View 1 (tube, rainbow, N blue to C red):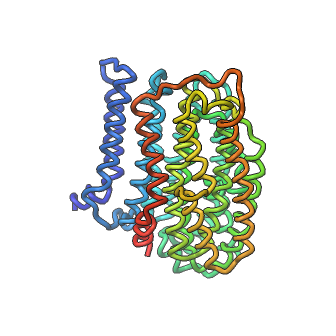
View 2: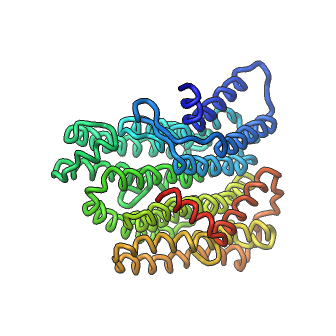
View 3: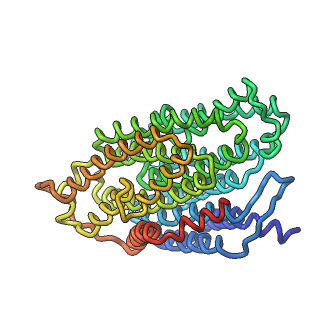
Length: 468
């Protein structure tokens, strides 16, 4: 019994052990240099990533409230990989920060909440895990302690999260009142499509919409992304959003499948609004973090198309796209993080002439943007192709046409940024940036991921085999 507990909760226990190690390092008598601390922490995160591939077992715990299987383990490994990349990218910023252990304690606490959320088989456990993953993120948003806009970002994050959590909790209470249970499998058995259940479901979709920044629940995204440190912005954009999407797909397909007609129509409208508004706002952004924020909102619109497929292909396409998105978005954020940490510059105009002083970083940024735009042979093209293919399985070609037109719009603003870097002149371009070893490793991982997951078909096939 104890062996089952240790193996089934391996991912959560490893994170908890690392948290205790960080706490002991912080409370100990020895004063650690930031560089030494960061090296130790990155080794621990690498061990955490490696541990996800060993001693695997499927099963349930705590009266079936906690579950794990091969697909859930794969999703957690994806989040571990993304967190490790972000940690490597943050080296230049964190080595001069006063509170390195605190940053990682908050970061790993929110990751722990996401792990419990992905493994939850009970809606109350899901809600508690969601709060554990959200509250530390607000503190992380305020981690640029000497900047007022960072405090504003944390305040907006708290207010929006409280509102979305309120909607979720209200929906959960109504759902419990109409079904008499909190367990996901039993909820699915008691759904009858009554008006009160539909209303509770709309509240749940609204709560999820806030977390994934779907329009019209996206209003907090640009301000929070701009005010937060780049490392936190990339974590919000990729890891937090990815975890919520994993749960969202699972809940829609397994719990609310009997209400599929209702949620198909809702997601149809949400996907169109999210793509169109995300793209229109991205067109006019000058701050790099706000630009990538609205770009990520537009990407959510494409993900919602894949979810509307209501099939194993739909679920596999979403998980595959999140994997591609981790490499693509973190590749872009990695360059923004380096430039911000070294020069403090975060506006698009600052990247004029970037290619002349930093040709290698410019090409990495360009490859990441090509992938986000969906240009072959990068992984982003195949990610969007599988999403649209899954959506087309329902025969709604109007939605696919709108998505194709939005891809053309997104192509414009991604290529515009590439033009700024490679073709525009600047009297004072960003100086030559010496990339440290750890951020360099992160860049290599991202570029390799973009190319390999695109050119090698094994990634999607493996995910599809897990979903079936």
